[in-house]
Amino acid sequence: MNARNMTLMAQPGQPPVARRPVRVVVCGEVNSGKSSAINALARANVSPAFFGLDRRPVVRLRHGPRPHAIVDFPGGRSELHDRIESCPNLAEATSCQMVIDAPHLAGLELIELSFPEDGRIPPETMQILAEADLLVWTTIASQAWRLTERNLVAQMPRPLHQRATLVVTRGDKLRLAADIRRVHRRLIVEACEFFDAVVFMGAAKRTIEASAESEESYIRSGGRDLATALRGFAAQIAAIPGRLDIAAPAPRPVGAPGRPAALPPVEGPDAEAVQALRDWVAGMNGILAAGIADAETGDCLHPLGGAPELAASTATFARAARTGDAAEDTMVEIDGHQLVIRPTEDGQLLFLLCQSGKITRSIAGAALARMVRLWDQRD
Image (cartoon, rainbow, N blue to C red; front, side):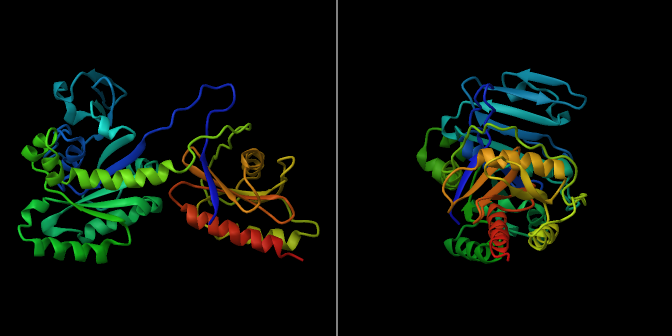
């Protein structure tokens, strides 16, 4: 699909917004090597360990010129530390933001997430996943990719499966090359539904310590292979134009997607086609608003789904955001949601505002293309 992709920039008169780092969630079951994967990427043993704890804080790590750590606790209290090691009660924290001197991580934010053993992802964790760009899942070499792991990954937002890396930790315990090939072949077959890359990691602490100065140790730890995979995926994201000035207020979704909305009655010569499109939208999961906008005025000519007020504001925004020629779709990210716009043969704009994590870009684009064909083929 030929599409133009954008993310929303500040409105005119507001200070410019810097491109945010690519968010990489590093996930896995308990003691599966999440911290080791982060340390291998950082080329230093920087990620705090929480052995034996049922509840662990969310750890965020990125590069910055002045290393420090901000630790958040229940009740809204925060502490600032020069080094994470100087925080005596880290195990009681809800989250920890670490800034380290690691220029090779510039542009990335690593987020370590732990999962409860009941097999369900909590809502607060799901929200972090929905806002992430890339997924790293750690699995132990001796028991790689168990059914419990598959069930957890399957619950994650589908867009994360498009650029995901499966990291096999403790890979150095597989002594024979034949064993590594056997595990690798099995993972390619069993996990290809969710992952685009598989990396074996032997991230012993002494190897990671040596990797700060030794490229050979960096390779042996698996950190370089993982960094290469992430940089490749990040480059795909960076290829999408990052910012666009749009001279219209962004629509603000309220309420739950899929909640029945009182749409105005369908009247006029296009009533049958409008009703067919409404039925199509009603059958889709995760649509916040849909409609046909006047390409000249931005008026919502036909609300097709969601609250009419949201469809109206989205139509105005879609008209302002629309760029490119008639052959292109326009995709805009708004606060984690996706707005997809496509012109019709009669010069109007058909749009879908989709909930993040419910519909992938490819599915949204394909659905919109089908809807435009239905509209263009009306009598």
